[in-house]
Amino acid sequence: MTSRSFEYLSAAVPHFCRLFSRAVIALTLFSSCEDAFDIHPYDVDYSGPLHLNAAQITRIEQSCADKDTIRVAVISDTHDWYTEMEREIDDINRRDDIDFVMHLGDLTNTGMIKEYEWARKRLLRLQKPFVTIIGNHDHLGTGDEAYDAIFGERDFSFIAGRIKFLCLNTNAGEYDYMADVPDFSFIQREAVRDSSRFDRTFVAMHIPPFCDQFNNNVSLAFRVWLDLLPGLYCCAFGHNHRTYADTLYHDGLVFYGVGSAEKRQYRIFTFTPDKYAVEVVDF
Image 1 (cartoon, rainbow, N blue to C red):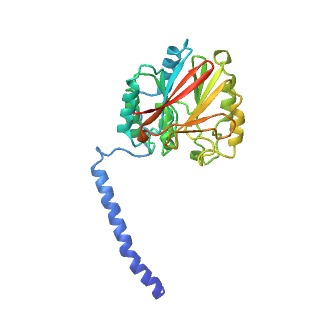
Image 2 (cartoon, rainbow, N blue to C red; image 1 turned 90 degrees about the vertical axis):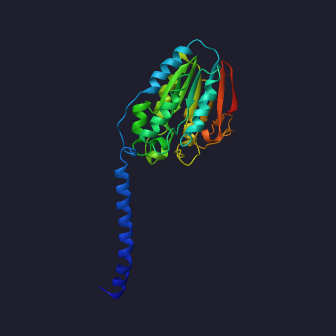
Image 3 (cartoon, helix red, strand yellow; image 1 turned 60 degrees about the vertical axis):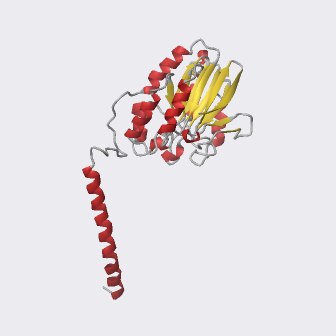
Protein backbone atom coordinates (compact mmCIF):
# COMPACT_ATOMS: atom_id res chain seq x y z
CA MET A 1 0.00 0.00 0.00
CA THR A 2 1.35 3.38 -0.93
CA SER A 3 1.53 6.23 1.54
CA ARG A 4 -1.06 8.13 -0.48
CA SER A 5 -3.50 5.17 -0.30
CA PHE A 6 -2.96 4.94 3.46
CA GLU A 7 -3.66 8.65 3.86
CA TYR A 8 -6.87 8.30 1.80
CA LEU A 9 -8.11 5.39 3.94
CA SER A 10 -7.23 7.21 7.14
CA ALA A 11 -9.37 10.15 6.05
CA ALA A 12 -12.22 7.99 4.70
CA VAL A 13 -12.70 5.71 7.72
CA PRO A 14 -13.94 8.42 10.13
CA HIS A 15 -16.34 9.71 7.46
CA PHE A 16 -17.67 6.19 6.89
CA CYS A 17 -18.10 5.68 10.63
CA ARG A 18 -20.11 8.89 10.92
CA LEU A 19 -22.42 7.81 8.05
CA PHE A 20 -22.83 4.35 9.55
CA SER A 21 -23.70 5.71 13.00
CA ARG A 22 -26.27 8.08 11.49
CA ALA A 23 -27.87 5.18 9.61
CA VAL A 24 -28.08 3.12 12.80
CA ILE A 25 -29.69 6.01 14.68
CA ALA A 26 -32.21 6.57 11.89
CA LEU A 27 -33.16 2.89 11.78
CA THR A 28 -33.53 2.83 15.55
CA LEU A 29 -35.82 5.86 15.51
CA PHE A 30 -38.02 4.46 12.75
CA SER A 31 -38.22 1.00 14.33
CA SER A 32 -39.21 2.52 17.67
CA CYS A 33 -42.04 4.41 15.92
CA GLU A 34 -43.34 1.47 13.89
CA ASP A 35 -46.94 1.94 14.97
CA ALA A 36 -46.87 5.66 14.25
CA PHE A 37 -44.89 5.48 11.02
CA ASP A 38 -46.26 2.58 8.98
CA ILE A 39 -45.89 4.14 5.52
CA HIS A 40 -43.54 2.70 2.94
CA PRO A 41 -43.54 2.73 -0.87
CA TYR A 42 -44.04 -1.01 -1.43
CA ASP A 43 -47.12 -1.58 0.72
CA VAL A 44 -49.75 -3.72 -1.02
CA ASP A 45 -52.08 -4.24 1.93
CA TYR A 46 -55.30 -2.73 0.62
CA SER A 47 -58.34 -2.16 2.80
CA GLY A 48 -61.51 -0.13 2.61
CA PRO A 49 -63.59 0.45 -0.54
CA LEU A 50 -61.98 -0.88 -3.73
CA HIS A 51 -62.73 -0.65 -7.49
CA LEU A 52 -64.29 2.76 -6.95
CA ASN A 53 -64.38 3.89 -10.57
CA ALA A 54 -66.63 1.02 -11.68
CA ALA A 55 -69.15 1.67 -8.92
CA GLN A 56 -69.09 5.41 -9.54
CA ILE A 57 -69.49 4.97 -13.30
CA THR A 58 -72.65 2.95 -12.71
CA ARG A 59 -74.04 5.88 -10.75
CA ILE A 60 -73.03 8.37 -13.45
CA GLU A 61 -74.50 6.42 -16.32
CA GLN A 62 -77.77 5.84 -14.50
CA SER A 63 -78.22 9.43 -13.34
CA CYS A 64 -77.24 10.98 -16.69
CA ALA A 65 -78.86 8.50 -19.07
CA ASP A 66 -81.59 10.82 -20.39
CA LYS A 67 -79.91 14.20 -19.97
CA ASP A 68 -79.25 16.57 -22.85
CA THR A 69 -77.02 18.83 -20.76
CA ILE A 70 -74.13 17.44 -18.68
CA ARG A 71 -72.15 19.53 -16.21
CA VAL A 72 -68.85 18.15 -14.96
CA ALA A 73 -66.53 19.54 -12.30
CA VAL A 74 -62.92 18.72 -13.23
CA ILE A 75 -60.18 18.81 -10.60
CA SER A 76 -56.56 17.68 -10.61
CA ASP A 77 -53.27 17.36 -8.71
CA THR A 78 -54.48 17.31 -5.13
CA HIS A 79 -51.34 15.60 -3.83
CA ASP A 80 -49.72 17.41 -0.91
CA TRP A 81 -52.64 19.84 -0.58
CA TYR A 82 -55.25 17.87 1.34
CA THR A 83 -56.61 20.89 3.18
CA GLU A 84 -57.15 22.68 -0.13
CA MET A 85 -58.67 19.48 -1.53
CA GLU A 86 -61.20 19.45 1.30
CA ARG A 87 -62.13 23.06 0.56
CA GLU A 88 -62.41 22.23 -3.13
CA ILE A 89 -64.78 19.38 -2.36
CA ASP A 90 -66.79 21.59 -0.01
CA ASP A 91 -67.13 24.14 -2.81
CA ILE A 92 -68.34 21.50 -5.27
CA ASN A 93 -70.76 20.11 -2.70
CA ARG A 94 -72.33 23.54 -2.30
CA ARG A 95 -73.34 23.50 -5.95
CA ASP A 96 -76.55 21.81 -7.06
CA ASP A 97 -75.81 21.91 -10.80
CA ILE A 98 -72.97 19.33 -11.05
CA ASP A 99 -73.69 15.89 -12.49
CA PHE A 100 -70.35 14.32 -11.57
CA VAL A 101 -66.68 15.05 -10.83
CA MET A 102 -63.53 14.01 -12.69
CA HIS A 103 -60.11 13.95 -11.02
CA LEU A 104 -57.31 14.13 -13.60
CA GLY A 105 -54.63 12.41 -11.54
CA ASP A 106 -51.87 12.84 -8.99
CA LEU A 107 -53.98 11.96 -6.00
CA THR A 108 -50.72 11.02 -4.25
CA ASN A 109 -47.20 12.39 -4.11
CA THR A 110 -45.28 9.11 -3.83
CA GLY A 111 -47.90 6.44 -4.58
CA MET A 112 -48.08 5.16 -0.99
CA ILE A 113 -51.16 3.39 0.36
CA LYS A 114 -51.67 5.96 3.10
CA GLU A 115 -51.76 8.74 0.54
CA TYR A 116 -54.32 6.84 -1.50
CA GLU A 117 -56.38 6.35 1.63
CA TRP A 118 -56.21 10.06 2.47
CA ALA A 119 -57.34 10.97 -1.05
CA ARG A 120 -60.08 8.32 -1.12
CA LYS A 121 -61.46 9.49 2.22
CA ARG A 122 -61.85 13.00 0.85
CA LEU A 123 -63.26 11.96 -2.52
CA LEU A 124 -65.91 9.89 -0.78
CA ARG A 125 -67.16 13.11 0.81
CA LEU A 126 -68.34 14.27 -2.61
CA GLN A 127 -72.11 14.35 -2.85
CA LYS A 128 -71.90 13.58 -6.56
CA PRO A 129 -70.32 10.53 -8.23
CA PHE A 130 -66.71 10.81 -9.35
CA VAL A 131 -64.00 9.09 -11.38
CA THR A 132 -60.23 9.39 -11.12
CA ILE A 133 -57.45 9.10 -13.71
CA ILE A 134 -53.98 7.87 -12.80
CA GLY A 135 -51.20 10.49 -12.65
CA ASN A 136 -47.44 10.11 -12.89
CA HIS A 137 -46.98 10.50 -9.12
CA ASP A 138 -49.58 7.79 -8.59
CA HIS A 139 -47.29 5.27 -10.34
CA LEU A 140 -44.37 5.63 -7.92
CA GLY A 141 -43.28 2.60 -5.91
CA THR A 142 -46.20 0.19 -6.16
CA GLY A 143 -48.63 3.09 -6.55
CA ASP A 144 -49.82 1.85 -9.93
CA GLU A 145 -50.89 -1.43 -8.31
CA ALA A 146 -52.63 0.51 -5.55
CA TYR A 147 -54.47 2.56 -8.16
CA ASP A 148 -55.56 -0.63 -9.93
CA ALA A 149 -56.94 -2.07 -6.70
CA ILE A 150 -58.56 1.05 -5.27
CA PHE A 151 -59.83 2.73 -8.44
CA GLY A 152 -59.58 0.31 -11.37
CA GLU A 153 -58.39 0.24 -14.99
CA ARG A 154 -55.84 2.83 -16.07
CA ASP A 155 -57.65 3.36 -19.40
CA PHE A 156 -61.41 3.45 -19.18
CA SER A 157 -64.52 5.09 -20.57
CA PHE A 158 -68.17 5.66 -19.75
CA ILE A 159 -71.19 7.27 -21.38
CA ALA A 160 -73.21 10.08 -19.82
CA GLY A 161 -76.13 11.25 -21.89
CA ARG A 162 -74.85 10.64 -25.42
CA ILE A 163 -71.28 11.65 -24.59
CA LYS A 164 -68.44 9.17 -24.23
CA PHE A 165 -65.91 10.27 -21.64
CA LEU A 166 -62.61 8.71 -22.66
CA CYS A 167 -60.07 8.58 -19.82
CA LEU A 168 -56.50 7.82 -20.87
CA ASN A 169 -53.30 6.86 -19.10
CA THR A 170 -50.69 9.13 -20.75
CA ASN A 171 -47.88 8.74 -18.18
CA ALA A 172 -45.36 7.30 -20.66
CA GLY A 173 -42.36 8.40 -18.62
CA GLU A 174 -43.31 5.96 -15.86
CA TYR A 175 -42.82 3.10 -18.36
CA ASP A 176 -39.51 4.46 -19.71
CA TYR A 177 -41.45 5.26 -22.91
CA MET A 178 -41.44 1.53 -23.74
CA ALA A 179 -45.14 0.67 -23.23
CA ASP A 180 -48.17 1.44 -25.38
CA VAL A 181 -48.92 4.63 -23.48
CA PRO A 182 -51.10 6.21 -24.70
CA ASP A 183 -52.79 3.04 -25.95
CA PHE A 184 -53.89 3.60 -29.55
CA SER A 185 -55.62 0.22 -29.69
CA PHE A 186 -57.80 1.27 -26.77
CA ILE A 187 -58.71 4.54 -28.51
CA GLN A 188 -59.54 2.65 -31.71
CA ARG A 189 -61.82 0.21 -29.86
CA GLU A 190 -63.56 2.95 -27.91
CA ALA A 191 -64.25 4.96 -31.07
CA VAL A 192 -66.74 2.27 -32.16
CA ARG A 193 -67.69 0.40 -28.98
CA ASP A 194 -71.33 1.10 -28.03
CA SER A 195 -71.50 3.39 -31.06
CA SER A 196 -75.32 3.46 -30.98
CA ARG A 197 -75.22 5.03 -27.51
CA PHE A 198 -73.00 8.06 -28.16
CA ASP A 199 -72.23 10.61 -30.85
CA ARG A 200 -69.94 13.00 -28.98
CA THR A 201 -66.67 12.53 -27.09
CA PHE A 202 -64.64 14.23 -24.37
CA VAL A 203 -61.05 13.11 -23.72
CA ALA A 204 -59.35 13.40 -20.31
CA MET A 205 -55.75 12.60 -19.37
CA HIS A 206 -53.09 13.56 -16.85
CA ILE A 207 -50.10 14.45 -19.04
CA PRO A 208 -50.73 16.35 -22.29
CA PRO A 209 -48.93 15.94 -25.61
CA PHE A 210 -45.58 17.73 -25.96
CA CYS A 211 -44.95 17.54 -22.21
CA ASP A 212 -41.62 15.87 -21.38
CA GLN A 213 -43.34 12.85 -19.78
CA PHE A 214 -45.64 12.24 -22.74
CA ASN A 215 -44.29 9.91 -25.42
CA ASN A 216 -43.61 12.60 -27.98
CA ASN A 217 -42.35 10.07 -30.50
CA VAL A 218 -46.06 9.39 -31.07
CA SER A 219 -47.55 12.80 -30.27
CA LEU A 220 -48.49 13.45 -33.91
CA ALA A 221 -49.95 9.97 -34.27
CA PHE A 222 -51.94 10.57 -31.08
CA ARG A 223 -53.67 13.50 -32.71
CA VAL A 224 -54.58 11.36 -35.74
CA TRP A 225 -56.14 8.70 -33.52
CA LEU A 226 -58.21 11.32 -31.72
CA ASP A 227 -59.84 12.10 -35.07
CA LEU A 228 -61.49 8.68 -34.93
CA LEU A 229 -63.62 9.80 -31.99
CA PRO A 230 -67.14 10.93 -32.95
CA GLY A 231 -67.98 14.56 -32.24
CA LEU A 232 -64.85 15.31 -30.21
CA TYR A 233 -65.54 18.40 -28.09
CA CYS A 234 -62.13 19.03 -26.50
CA CYS A 235 -59.54 17.52 -24.17
CA ALA A 236 -58.60 18.19 -20.54
CA PHE A 237 -55.41 17.44 -18.62
CA GLY A 238 -53.66 18.11 -15.30
CA HIS A 239 -49.98 17.71 -14.38
CA ASN A 240 -48.82 21.28 -15.05
CA HIS A 241 -50.62 22.67 -11.98
CA ARG A 242 -52.03 25.67 -13.76
CA THR A 243 -55.21 26.76 -15.47
CA TYR A 244 -54.76 27.52 -19.14
CA ALA A 245 -55.95 26.51 -22.60
CA ASP A 246 -54.02 25.81 -25.79
CA THR A 247 -54.76 24.23 -29.14
CA LEU A 248 -51.34 22.45 -28.92
CA TYR A 249 -51.64 21.15 -32.50
CA HIS A 250 -52.80 24.53 -33.87
CA ASP A 251 -55.81 22.92 -35.54
CA GLY A 252 -58.70 24.14 -33.39
CA LEU A 253 -58.87 21.23 -30.92
CA VAL A 254 -58.51 22.85 -27.50
CA PHE A 255 -56.65 21.18 -24.61
CA TYR A 256 -57.69 22.64 -21.24
CA GLY A 257 -55.21 22.56 -18.37
CA VAL A 258 -56.75 22.18 -14.92
CA GLY A 259 -54.97 23.81 -11.98
CA SER A 260 -53.79 21.99 -8.89
CA ALA A 261 -55.59 22.20 -5.56
CA GLU A 262 -52.78 24.48 -4.42
CA LYS A 263 -53.96 27.07 -6.96
CA ARG A 264 -57.49 26.80 -5.55
CA GLN A 265 -59.11 26.57 -8.96
CA TYR A 266 -61.06 23.94 -10.86
CA ARG A 267 -63.04 23.88 -14.09
CA ILE A 268 -66.67 23.19 -14.91
CA PHE A 269 -67.47 21.85 -18.37
CA THR A 270 -71.05 22.16 -19.60
CA PHE A 271 -71.89 19.94 -22.58
CA THR A 272 -75.00 20.37 -24.71
CA PRO A 273 -75.84 18.52 -27.96
CA ASP A 274 -74.18 21.07 -30.24
CA LYS A 275 -71.58 22.89 -28.12
CA TYR A 276 -69.72 23.10 -24.83
CA ALA A 277 -68.80 25.85 -22.38
CA VAL A 278 -65.96 26.05 -19.85
CA GLU A 279 -65.68 28.13 -16.70
CA VAL A 280 -62.97 28.49 -14.08
CA VAL A 281 -64.07 28.36 -10.45
CA ASP A 282 -62.01 29.96 -7.67
CA PHE A 283 -62.62 28.58 -4.19
